[in-house]
Every structure is written in C-alpha cells, then in structure tokens.
Amino acid sequence: MDLCNLSVIRELMAEAGISFRKEYGQNFLTNRIIPEEIAENCTDSLDSMIIEIGPGIGCLTAELASRYKKVIAVEIDKGLIPVLNKTLSEFDNVTVINEDVMKLDIKALVDRYSEGIPVSVCANLPYYITTPILMHLIESGVKFSSITVMVQNEVAARLAAKPGTADYGAITAVIGYYGEVRKLFKVSAGSFVPMPKVDSAVVRIDLYDEKPYVPKDEKLFRNIIKAAFEMRRKTLSNAIGAKLGFSKAAVAEALRSLGLDENVRGERLSVSDFVKLSDALCNN
Ligand code: SAM
Image 1 (spheres, rainbow, N blue to C red):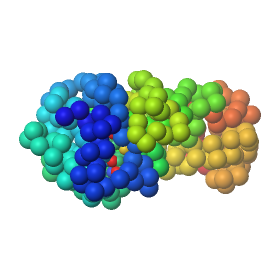
Image 2 (image 1 turned 30 degrees about the vertical axis):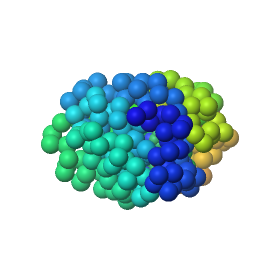
Image 3 (image 1 turned 180 degrees about the vertical axis):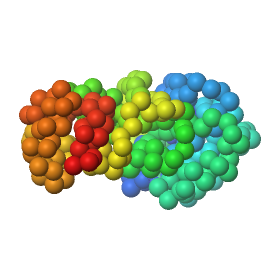
Image 4 (image 1 turned 45 degrees about the vertical axis):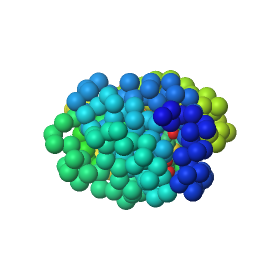
C-alpha cells in the first residue's frame, strides 16, 4: 500500500469516517521520497528505538519500522488509531500510543520500551506546537542520540542559524546548547495534503554526549538568552539590566571581561558566549 498516494489516503480516511483535523496540524505527506529520505537520514544506528510524534496514517512510521529495531509512534487523534492498526499490521516492531505527546512522561516511556538500545526521535511535527514539543523532548532528561524533525522552513532556518544572522534567535541558542543542528533538506508545500501555506524543511539535531559548555547557573543562562532576544532592539547591557535587574555597568563589565563590546546585541553571541556571560554575572 502506498501511504503517500492521495487516493489511498482519502480511501483510508473515508473508511475510518474521519477527515483532516486542522487543530492537530494534519498535513500528510504525499511525496513518497520524503519519508524514505527522512527515515534514512534520521540517525546512524539501525539498532535504535525511534520515537515518532504524529504518525498520521503511518507513511513515515512504515519507513522507520522497516529500517530500525523498534518504533514507538505517539498519535493524539483517536480517529487515526484504527487506520494505523491497518496500515502498520505487517510490522511487529511498532507500538502505537494514542496520547498527546505533551502529556507523556518521555523518560518513563523510554525506560519502559528501550531496553538499553539507543533512542532517537523522528517526526513530521504538527506546526502549531513545534517549539513546545522540541523543548519537551530536550528537557525530558532522555539522552537521545538525535532528534530529526520536519518543521516550517522558517523555523528550520532559525534552528540552524549562525550568530550574527537575522534568523538567529533564542531558540537557536537554547537548542544549540544541547546539540548540533543541521538542516538536511527543504520540502515544498506541494508535498502535503492539505497543502500548507509555506514550505518545510527537515532538521537533525545531534545531541551532545557531553555538552561543550555548561553554565554554573542554568536558570540564569536561560533567562539571559530570553532577555537578550525579547528586547532585540536594545543592547545586551540594557536588555539584561532591564529584565533581570543587573546594573548596566555590571553587564558592561562582564561583557568586557569576555572581550566583547559593551554595546553588543544578543544576536551576536554564540552559545559559549552566553555561558561565559552567565558565569561572569552569576555572583553579582
Ligand atoms: N507523519 C504524518 C505524515 O508525515 O504524513 C503526519 C504528520 S502531521 C504534520 C502531524 C501529526 O501529528 C498528525 O497526525 C496529528 O494528528 C499529530 N499530532 C498533533 N498534535 C499532536 C500531539 N500533541 N501529540 C501527538 N500527536 C500529535
């Protein structure tokens, strides 16, 4: 069964008495090469357990199940469960869980199913909730090998941006703290049904075993990043001073001690700069 074929998708959904649910960000892939490419490039170890978020009717799930040891697919839409039971019936290495991923204890899920093998995430994410899902995964405490996700092209550009560019933002610095981000390829809006308004792209995050830079106070580090990008038009000294209650002079002094100009803006700072700045300020 070609799960990217438009007639097959429509027929499966009609049989189940369901239609596309906009509130769940349902845009299903109709270009067969894309799920193949995503599955092929999402992680290096075939002996992996893959967590998929939002299997839809299962086009990516089937590609993952035929390559990797185990797949756990988490789907919020109850109406899709009978469809998935049918389309994935040939695979005995897939477990479908009908749940909102944001309500799932990811650590407990991994402890229950992974049996010590490497774990990665691979998903065509629902766009209404991309960033919260990424943060939920990354903050779960699970040591994922990689997280590969299809997101809106502009979000992909943000995730993979370099410091000093227009796309560089808080999410770039926060995710960059946990791992290395690569944009794999772009996917045109015409590859989905219903067709979204914008193009998409696939990004892969390889999580660090050992983070190269670790702040003394992670909360302060995160707050500094938040302040830096919430008040983008201000210099960093003004933004951090205003938001976090440090004196402008103390921030300027900390920046100078790192060899940075006191009038620098947040988007110029790399993750390591943010870590050093946070450490310089944490005893103030
Ligand atoms: N994987 C399919 C594909 O590539 O064709 C479908 C991807 S579609 C963009 C997003 C999927 O995520 C939908 O199946 C939707 O029902 C599901 N979804 C949306 N919100 C979810 C949530 N909070 N938890 C789990 N699944 C969710």
